[in-house]
Length: 520
Image (tube, rainbow, N blue to C red):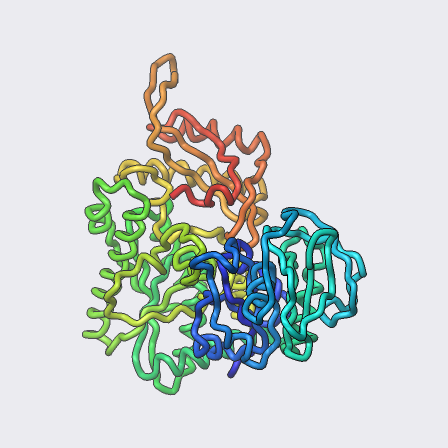
């Protein structure tokens, strides 16, 4: 089943993934590719439209990101946004110059000509600008359709199927920006609003059947939302397959799971989802690999490599008992791909995720990542369409490397046990207050900071625990949550009284950006 899409080419913008989200909100599939993606890769997504994103460069800079000009000749509508407008103008023979007055932040745009892009939108718009360059001379066939007091705000060559805006319609600071993107996706591109959960399930099941063939697969199951949905999706595909392929889910105890997680996940996924589950306690081998390691990236890569080694071992065992295994299923999500691979574009790599950049270069198993183009909220909707229980779907995100990225410094069994106890109190009190499902993520972090305290008239010298709670839509940005005073008070009192080795609690009030959600 072919899924028509709108491809966003990323020139290094902060908001590239947000453009895709806004388009998806209209039930049109959209994917972000790097600016230098090949024409074959772009065509593989059956595009009915192309969006050129913003970016921090100037088009005339040495080394500035320039897409293949043939992207503008694919015969589908193209929308340039900010840098995308400037690249379009520059590539087609116009002129771009540093603006006399740079525009950053809120601005007012006035339409000076009718345009399908602005259909149903008022003549005067409030928008969000972020540019230092401006289109000074338009290419042949282009006309001005909107302006600010200082610069070109929108241009088009409708005959050549090209539109461009200097402002950012994807951000909420442009109140009617969603209408503009809707006009482009539905009216100009004519994209069918058919990308629903059921459509995704049907197309993914068909693709997995074709991909796996007669082989068996194993799934890297963590018990979280992402890997559980991926497992149910692939399990459905293989159960329906005429080749009688089978999915075996492998759940690994890496020594940095939450308290009682190893037992709870096994019961939950076997009883509630009916998955064929193999549980492997690999605590000792992970702890040996992590001994003495303090660098966050090294931790992530060690855990990623060791996970794959465990899966390879299990695959060989399953092969001996049940038949050939060629495939490894992972619950990789789109934000993981963006942060780890930087979509091969000019954006910065934030951190390596064990299920993306943490994989070893040589793997014996081939990957199936059925959710890699989705955001977390989209995955939860897919899970509901699959009939999965809310108890699983409403779990807050938990990092693949587990508590290892919440233990700053060396990971030891003593520190892991300490953090497990702290974390159970934090999450338990937030659930008791009825806040768990209203918060994107809440957890404890163990800091390598020792401080003096006094408990029972005795001097103590113990660890510091940080409490973290954030609101987010998809994990790409986040705001810290002002937890109620009474909840914080109870958490603090319980941890210092119940967790031996911790005598100080601090609350993290950092948003993303500038921080990340996890501490490492």
